[in-house]
Image (cartoon, rainbow, N blue to C red; front, side):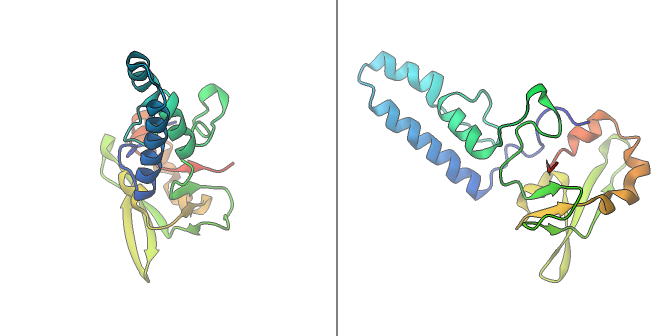
Length: 175
């Protein structure tokens, strides 16, 4: 099972950038209300900074605002299927169709050995377009992968290492 960050966490969509900017502006408003210079500096260093990523790190101050705006709450124990999923990630994995997402066309695997990459094929303007796992954040709308998309790949995926799963960690899960 994948461990670590979702791939592409440093690639922000326009919506992500707006949220990070808003969180930074909220922190600036709070900082500007602090009159003592040392306290103002301490606040900014410990609680005011945002991060140009979708995971926001420690989650204090503006980083907490950012993290909570961009990510779900998560579940204790760092369960790999539930811990801090992105709120509006464009690719979800579900056991059944969901009303707010279009099913993808299919999933392919490209590359060999420890360089295998999941490729998600979606229909855009009556043409199929391929998105490798590291670029799914660029999908133009929300899509869902269903069990039937994974079934042709099961024999290959059974042998994937944690490294391969982590290299391709690119979607939210719906329980």
